Image (cartoon, rainbow, N blue to C red):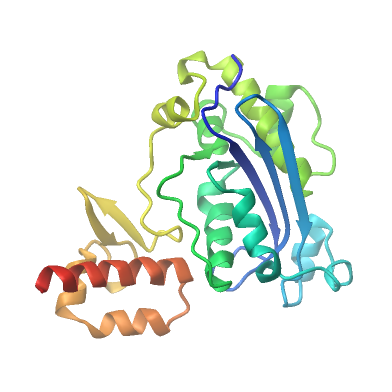
Length: 256
């Protein structure tokens, strides 16, 4: 069945300097925005990460330092990208674990808020892995019966991801045909911070790493307020620090 949308769905794919959310940057961004009437608008940009692209990364996506030396930085186009994504639900392939976290980091580095709490976050890989655990290229072959040429080109990957989703809806009618029904079918993940330094258990933020793993964040902040300073000075993604600050402020507000 065709995908039924009540608001635009933006399918995002990034090519990057690496996979470290705290330090790596976007070198190519592609967004395929599908309107409720089925029409599509594509936005693609090469970006200067303002750092060298490691050869290992260039070998994967084919983008070199020379190709992006005259490209704008993310900060220069951040407002344009945010406006393009306005009122969109967000989708991608493994996007909840990589593309969206890194995109949020880039917005924060640019001094812009990018709120995802009011949006549906549809990770096509999640539905795929529930039903047919494989890779993007294999998924494209399996669902669309086509070879994925020029894989790791952001636009090619984003378009392929949407074609896979359309095929999935035909194959798995039990998932429904709306963004909401698919997320309900695959399960809605409660995301605290995209780097998963915190997780939600029974409505409470819990540390998911280090010596305090398994303890409530508020409990640790009350007992060891210096731990907040350590994390804020540490090599953690900005989104993690933002969420930690929100938890701290909420804790202080309750004290008051």
